[in-house]
Length: 440
Ligand code: NAD
Image 1: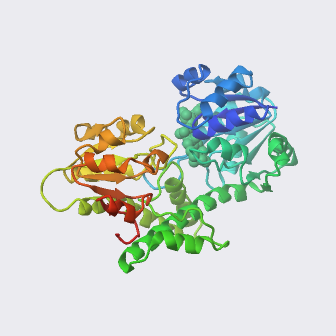
Image 2: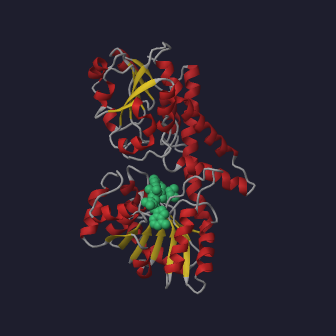
Image 3: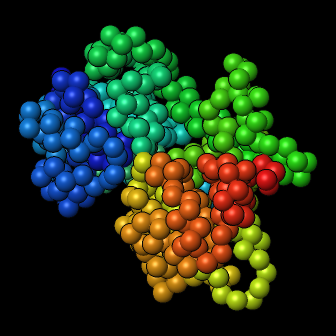
């Protein structure tokens, strides 16, 4: 089979590469010329474990190509995937569909024969229908179908998630579209992956409902964690105690500084807007959005309270800037709230992140005189008044604590991911603060 994927970001590049690995001929298109030129040379624009080898392998085997111009491949494609961004519209919180609709127009102008156009971007209910209308208006004689196939991969484990997903969701209107997508996902049938065929509106809603549910679970445990701090309970034990109930499940019950990333914040907000537009408000998700925003905006206060009230300028070591480990993605990361708030409160920062510093530097350009970018955790902690763990990268889980104790000016650790044991840290002479657990 031949497919084109338009938008070669986290989702487009991973999906395209994995389809190529399944044996499909894939052309990945992006309007970013530099990205495409680099990809042709095997230079990957993002950090995603295992992706570089898989891209190189499939380029070498001739199944993966990169283009700037979609007209080069769409007319030979059984399916054309749209995988461009759908960020939050600044003015009202709706999903900004301008990139999706611009691609729909380009497809309409260039497509001459039947193909299934598949929305892989996360898009609100009704977008497949709108894409259909746009194409029909520009190219009334074209035979085509529009399907919805939302993507559930997670950055950091994207290849495995794509190759061994919990499920695939496909929303389509015609048998012809269904059969083409069935054939494309045939390698997953062989692994007995559940494939849910439904209508397009349902497929579109499943993606938002899934992300909003997960965001709710995180917010729930963050609020329980706040209560634990007031009553002397231990949130980690609460998570285990409730998570062992099969109806609840263990995952996504870890307290933290608030969810971030390229999906949960924008998708919860977009779902709230869709629900309001259809006069079926989702007050639960509205509360989740508000609670998470407040949490991210208040986390710096915990750090300031933990380093004491003296007027002296503080130096804070920050370990981790990305919204989660194993990615360089900084979109909506809690660090984007915490770092500026600490600087506004007269702190100087020494920071280290294993993969996110290049992108983080762009975000924090205007604070560059207040931030020292360090080569590792130990350089970042040298002379600091406190060390803050913001992202739970594996390399932060087994730090040489005795060495840190000597390097820090004050032995204070604020662990916003609960990765250390309070009793052990106290025995090593640290003042240790975590979330929702009594101090040792
Ligand atoms: P991204 O920003 O990493 O990539 C989007 C790409 O599309 C960019 O490279 C951009 O240059 C390109 N693009 C924009 N307009 C174009 C056009 N007209 N022609 C060609 N290329 C164009 O975005 P992403 O993180 O891959 O997300 C894409 C979609 O997938 C979003 O809707 C997102 O919500 C959804 N999604 C993302 C993830 C994730 O973990 N990142 C997971 C599941 C779903």
